[in-house]
Length: 230
Image 1 (spheres, one colour):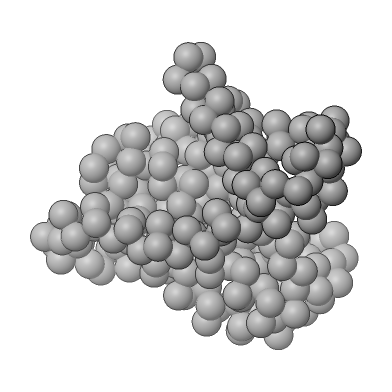
Image 2: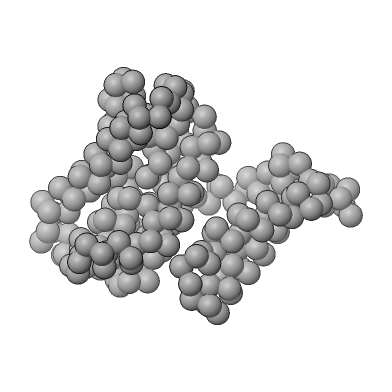
C-alpha cells in the first residue's frame, strides 16, 4: 500500500483535496469555529502521513501542484472588489489608512516579540510576512534570508486563527461598519481570513480582498525596512 501511494503522482493532491472537503463537511454540520476546514485538513494529512509512514517529500511531489493555483486564486479576489468599486472611491482615505495601520501593527508586533523572546535574525525575518498571502510571503521570506517552509506554516496558522477568531474580535471591540470589518480581517489574516469576511457580507469580502493585495505590497516594502532593525 505504501509503495502504491508513493509511486502515485496524484497522492499529495488526492489526500489534500479529500481531507479539505471532509473539513468543509464537518464545519457545515457542526458550525463551530474550531472546525476550520484548513486546520482539519492539515491535521488529517499529518495523521495519514504518520500512519502510513510516508515521507513528506513523497507527499509534496504531488501536493506541490496545488501551490500553482495560489497566485491566480489571489488575483481572482479582485472580482468582488471590482463590484464594489464605487465604495472604494468613496472611502479611499479611510481604507488605505486602515490597511497601513494593519501592516504596521503586524510588523511592529513581530519586532517586539523578537526583542522579548530573543529571536535570531533568521527567525525574525521568517516571521515578518506572517499576515500576507502565501504567494507573496514566500518571496519576502526568501529575499530576506528567512526559512521559507516555516514562513508558510506561520502564514497558514495566522490565517486559520484569523478565520476562527474574526467574529469574536469584531464583537469584542464593537466593530460594526462593514468596510472596517473587511479591512481588519484582510490585513490581519490574508486569504484564509477573507473567506470569513465573504461569509459576513459582500462589502466585507470586497474590502478584505483589497487588503490582501495592498497589505502584501506594503509588507514587501515594510519588511525590508524592519529587517534592518534587528
